[in-house]
Structure formats: structure tokens, C-alpha cells
Length: 222
Image (cartoon, rainbow, N blue to C red; front, side, top):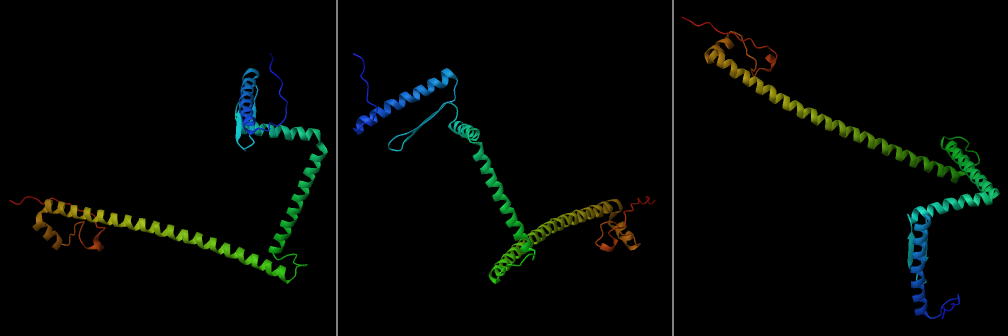
């Protein structure tokens, strides 16, 4: 015997309805997969159960399929009903022109122009807006100046540290020069040279810090 036909109407029994939904849902998804593979078609399937559960299948990406559907639907509607599209863009253009006119009028009022037609309350609101704008500008200006001062202080500290390091290196070089001078002339010759007015490089006298080094070898006494 052949399978009997089922009347297409809502199944009253909840258990039978759930079993039928599960079976037919799986069959529908299977058919969608076969259609996508056999015919190289882009298939997107979305199913919501009576309890609100979501079941979906997409041969590529559901988001891509929905975006493609919306784009093609808009083009199709524009082709079917071009006058409504023209009216829509006309309304959009009119709204944009009105917004531009309002902005221009507001800007002129901010500049103190075209104040006719404004009552005391409107002028007070305009004054409050200007005060708020000036307050924001002053805060931004103070922030920029504070950041610049902090940056200058940081650079000054770095330069000061570099100067300290250089001063240490200069003192170290002076000490090495003094040690070298003592090795060449000896302690007595160093004292005599100091008494004769010769001050070697590396002396503690800062006024003579730029005097060049003059090294001389004394002749051996017989």
C-alpha cells in the first residue's frame, strides 16, 4: 500500500507536532545542502521553531547571503517603483538643506550677527553656549600648555643629567692627566713646575681649566 497523504494543517498534538517538525527540518536542511552542491547555488536557510529556537544553514556565510539579499532586494524595489525612490531622495535633500540652513544661522548668531527676532531667553541660551564653548577652549589651551611645560621640564632634567655625567668624565680626565704628569716629572718637578707658574691640565683651579697641556722631558743631570 502506498503512503497516505497527510492533510496540511496544524497538528494539534504537541508531541506529534514536535516529531514532525524535527523530521521535516532535517529533511529540509538536507535538501538545501544537496541543492547547493548539485547546482552550485548559494543557499541560506533560517528556521524558527514554535518555541523560538533558531536553526540555520548557509552554503557560504549567512551574513554574506543576507547582505546580498538586501542589496538585490533594494535594487529590485527601485526598478519596480522608481517614482517612490525619487521622492525619497528629494525628501532627503530637503532635510539636508534645512539642516545646513539651521547650522549657518546658528553660526552667524554665535558670531553676534543676525540676532533680530531673539527674545531675552534665546539670548541667554546663546550666551550660555558661548560660555561653555569658551570654557572648553580654555581647558584645552591649559592642557596643551601644561603638557608642553612638562615636556620641557623632562628635557631639562635629561640635559642636566647629561651635564653631570660630562662633568664627571672631565674630572676623571683631569685626574688621569695629573697622574700622567706626576709619572713624567715626578712629585718634586711637579711642585717646581707649579712654583714656576706652570699649572698642568687637571688642576682644581677652574679658571685654568682651558689651559692646554705642555709636556717637557727634563734633561738628565750629570
